[in-house]
Image: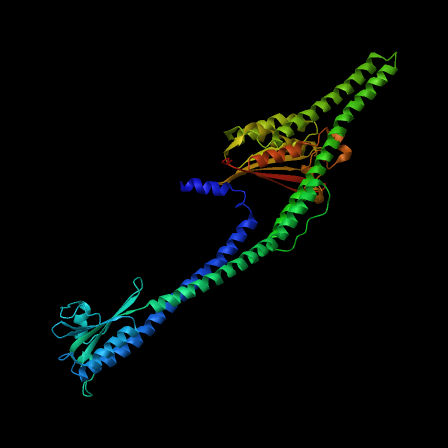
Length: 487
């Protein structure tokens, strides 16, 4: 049942409001001290009033106890003075007075109903030993007291050492105390009501004022969402709103960067796809304009058209690979793979390309390595890096691929003696269609998507890629990937 109630409260749109929660918190924090203060003050007043009453009555009855001894009342109860005094004090305190002698017999009862009866109780027994007892009954509204009747002279060291000759047992009403408490409770209640109304008003005002900066943030975000402003948000009222705004501005900057990147990507894709088509159209138009073109010319032009078609096919293939990798739900086919064998197979495939420019390709394996990877995707990534090291090299150059591992990662370093990459372009080389050497990009035949694909694959493996290079001396790419794949 309680779980259902909590669920309904959690789903309540009203209680999900931060303003309502702040309002309720302030109201509760304001009301609880008031309630506690009222209870404590009334309790302290009652306790103090009872103590004062006990002290006052105790002094009065001690005087009467002395009079009882003086008039020898325990042996002769006919003293009109004492009887009048007992009746007077009983009426004064709206109570009852009983006098008990050594035989535990009641010799005087101001109510006149217990005279001659025997009373044996713990309080009476303790009182005969010289000990006063007091009991307050708040529910029924009376105080019970016992006062020993003792014959004290100046020679005794203490009253407790003097045996009691009798016990004065009294019960007094505390109705006047309770009446005062009731009056105080009513006044306290009225004061509390006024205070609660003030707390409600103050809590409402504070909860409204505290949330004004958050309303500014919400309004500013709505304006950005509607496209009314391109400026960064600024709500410096609270440290929390500053953090929220800073995070939103970072997201906004990232979104704008992604939007710009998307526009550039679309523009680059359009350009890259149009270029081969434009070349093929020029070649075809040239052939159509020459009615008596020779077979050799036809063969030459058709060969050029075939090259452009191949280039177009490469761009489309790489684009499709990139789109698949960009999907958030891209599937990883993880298996245990021998990395040494994978690199040896790659080197075997790429050596024919290296022989064209007499480039030496060397694989150095420092230890056997097996890891949990997607073999197809990792093959594509490492193949791109090694192929780039060959393509962007120089005649009679070299490419060195090194494999090593520790207890957590395996690393593949691809070093070359090529043209190098300027340090200022380290981050840009992973952008789609970006080429460092734009003047020779057409000769080399790349699509500008290889490194973007490579980085995506490595990140999907929870790995990292770093580049270091010296212009006209060579480049090194270092790939680190965990030996064990974790989602």
